[in-house]
Length: 246
Image 1 (spheres, helix red, strand yellow):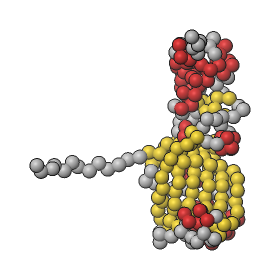
Image 2: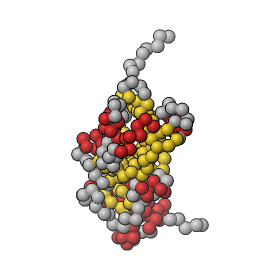
Image 3: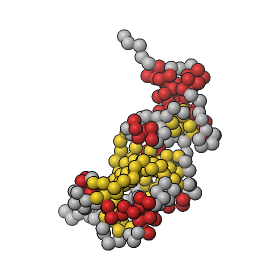
Image 4: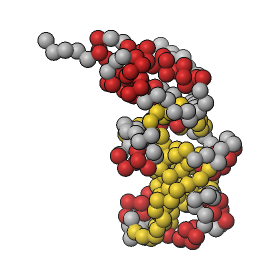
């Protein structure tokens, strides 16, 4: 009979997880936690058992695993109400955090799929802006936005330290409504590296179309949020039950 791993025959990972939860409750956010090797020695278990325990805490948003750096006490995830349309800069500022971005790409060109999302002809020029969005230096998301080519001048704005929406308002467009949906997937190796996290990294991906007050598309965006750092609050109206006559 094949020898079982200690993860299956012995719930030691729960003991490790309980100890790590205490550390996360007592230590400041961002504190470096013991390495897998240190935990292996402390609890006298295999590295696989330690890794299993740590991964559970990552899934519970208590621990951040950063590529090449180790495991850290995670900050509580940020909550966002689904019915509120605010720019990332506005949202982070209201929370008392410092918003910033790292520009990955900013260009004007053609993209038939993006043009279609903006209700433009396939050969229309579009503006593409890819950024890592950060709150007080912590990467929260990778944002890929496309705008109609008429907004090419927005590329001269401060897209690293400023707000894209503020720049668009200055160009004469007032945001009116956002529609979209949220899906989930694992980050690619490149995305995990950009977000400074150790894979596997679950992402919440919001695809959104913003129109101005006249109903004209202004921005189509795909934003991949680190699932452990971002929560979208939802709410629904439950209609009263209508009796059915027999």
